[in-house]
Length: 534
View 1 (cartoon, rainbow, N blue to C red):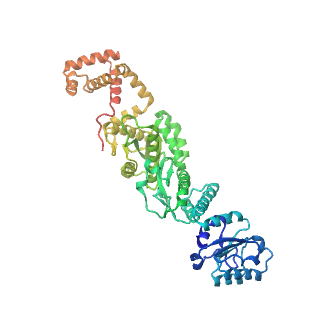
View 2: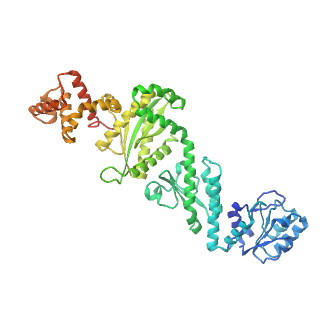
View 3: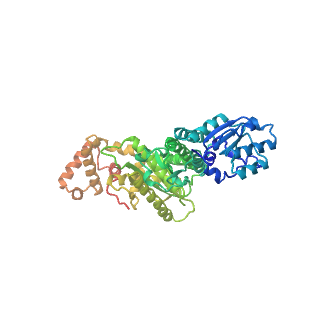
């Protein structure tokens, strides 16, 4: 059985409230007696004279028509009869206030006076009261329906995207359910539940199987829990979690919408030819991108930690990329550094900017700290294998592209040389930065690939040997002796190989332009080999 206090707490969706004396729509406390007393039955009466008919412990619902022409003293008499019969409470349909004398009689007798609006569906209210009072399956269904009504009203209301929205929703759900419902996990600072962070339940596919998992995209960002075991809660928790996930997603979309617009332009800048950057400058300024600032880029390659041989499944890569984007936004949004998080293909570009014109190394140190934190979260929460490349600090729109190109090449280097979890940087001499810029240009790659196409046609193994031999030969000013020492070959073997290579390529290494073109092509091909990292 339920008490009047529980009915009031869980009946807000029906408009059920405590009626204060002389107040219009005001609510007061139910009182200790009402909190302790159980409702044995729900009885409906159509006139004031019949109020005393139901037995002790009944919650009497007085229909609205009975109060329209009633005199104040008649209401006093009805309240006194209800109190004498030891009713659990008296519900006045359509009442906005009661006479002061009636309120005093009820207060002395410990009789709760309740009300619902005249516009309320009284039949639905009575069905709900009966289910709740009887308990068991009826009570479970009634409380589950009450929660679903709360969620339906929330879905039909304003598209709110404020930090308090999650807390307000959970408070309404708790009231309707009659049990406290909390959100475990930080949820990017949006949650206001009473639970402690549940980091172990946040992250991978295992967490998504939890009925209370809150999903934003494909990432589990928290878990909805009922504080006590309850069958009605078991029925509605998945729906509550879905509603919380939608609210969190709307909040994040509202918060990061400007960044998403800038991210689209940044993706264009990264892949654009250098000659096209001029046309993008004014567009960047118009949407608030700090064009003239100092920038440093980080390229993040993500692989599922449990992947087997070959490429991991596309769906898992997409889920991981979505989770990584959210983690980076959570960490970098409150940072003092101006961050942009951009999806480029199957990787993430993280761009840090500083518009104070200060020392670029200050920006680099702060940015590395934030990226280190993001990488640690990705490894701990997602079990991801993360390879990160960092570009040098550069100014202007061209600097964004340059640093991004360097970061991408450094990430490819980290991937090829097996350096997960640490930030890999380009060399400080500048040569690899130039080669990285050439490598980023589709035109440059096409020209260089065409130069080496004849040896590529020999197959991967023979092509790799040919490029390695030609690189060493050109690196050592076409000296078979020094190239042989570098390759651990006899000079005659080097001479033989070079003769075969030049025949295959159809070139004359006596032409300085040919030597320069082939040298650049070979060095670009070997860009990711044997570079330093930090």
